[in-house]
Length: 103
Image (cartoon, rainbow, N blue to C red; front, top):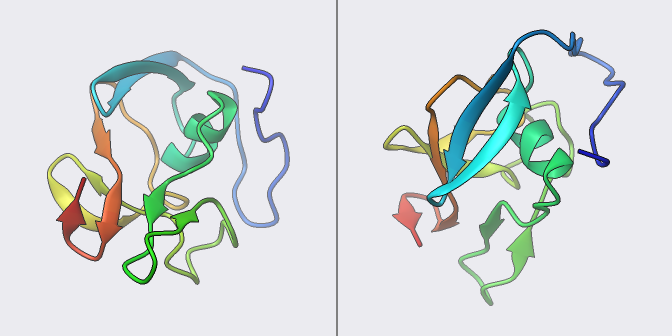
């Protein structure tokens, strides 16, 4: 977990209990209280979705919930801001191609 984010202007990351969640059926380890985007970043996953125009990759950009770069399908719900959503044990996360369109 070399890419772990250690400081954020709004969120505080306390390294508490370890949890496991699933990104496109791949098991990922994270810390309870960490955001989905931060956990994916730490796992080396930089592409969170693909744009509807030209199918370009988008990743963590603002990390404060103001842009749409981190929209993902989380536990069956599309268009969730993964930079603001805290990871939970057993959570299921998938990339989106565009709003509501899951890969």
